[in-house]
Image (cartoon, rainbow, N blue to C red; front, side, top):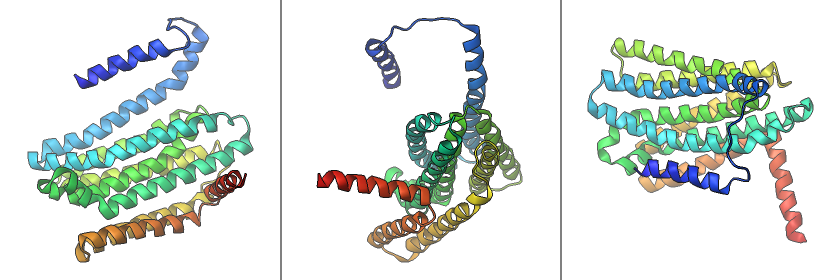
Length: 307
């Protein structure tokens, strides 16, 4: 009932505050453009819905209700911040990119900044779950969900890759090539069938999470390759940055494991935060576009402060 009330209130207020009244109209040329632009996005949305529900369906069919409970909680915990971040990033970045789609050099520069910004936020998301994922799961859902610690880190890193991938997807939409997200996510969909095969062979929920991580990684690689054909930003130039991303994410997993095994809770918090700062500094060394943007922003604020 609360969700229905929200939907009705949102609709009513939108109509009340709109500058123009809502009217239906038909113009064949515009409808064709809308459909050609929008059908891959619709198909991609349905595909992602099937993938996310499919992962949980595989767990529900193959395992006990207890496993379904803690896997679902771990999935929801990792999914919520990723949904928020990707929605906000796409809303902010799409107008910036689309406004320069007819200026190749300017678009390439903005595309590079977008990719690096999304990679940075994705890395920090993955690192937070690698360091604090199990503790967050238990703190929010209770001790009965402790078994979910085995998958929450994997799911968090997977969502980190998904956030990083959103930079490519928003660039693809900005140049009206909406087929790129659909084609790339077909690889993520294929990972679901691989997971079904592993579960049929007797493997556990951890393998389902691992196949999801590999699926997202392959989807990222496909999107990167397809987008490089439209933007003068070759794949080779991105490989060192991606390698550093993978290294720091892996090290974060190792750091989180060591802290949980040897450090008290307060030590985990302090040392974990220190590690997050360290990887942010290290990764920024490989981000010339974002680093330059931040430098200009800080200089601008300093100048305003002096005035």
